[in-house]
Length: 115
Image 1 (cartoon, one colour):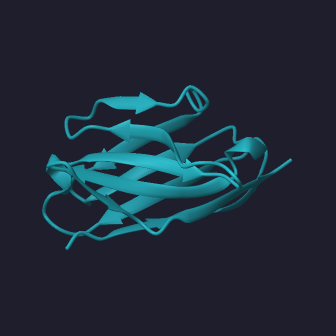
Image 2 (cartoon, rainbow, N blue to C red):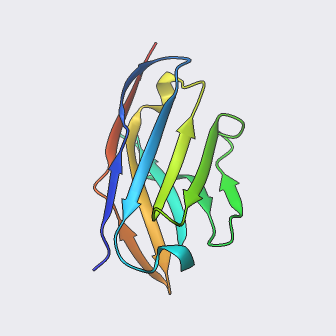
Image 3 (cartoon, rainbow, N blue to C red):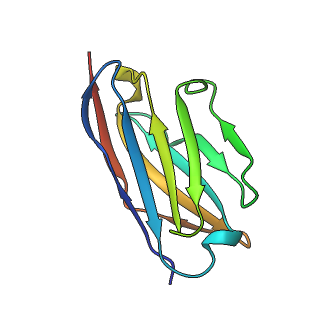
């Protein structure tokens, strides 16, 4: 059973920074693609950033230049460094693991950015 646990969310003023972490269990992390999604109030869940098992990254246009996704295979953990936060970044952030066309989600962590 694969489990994902997000942490690092919270409240921050606009322009501030937060770093989200997603720790995973199991032995498949190294071979898995990882992604961060978010769902804002009244909005659909959207892809924020992704990273392949080989380290290639992809970002939503809305976060390019502000957010950085990274992974530490030794710790089975993926990170999302979020800088220059804006009120529109307010959302529940979810971590997702993809392995062999199977998808696993964390429970989410709330990020609130005040203006």
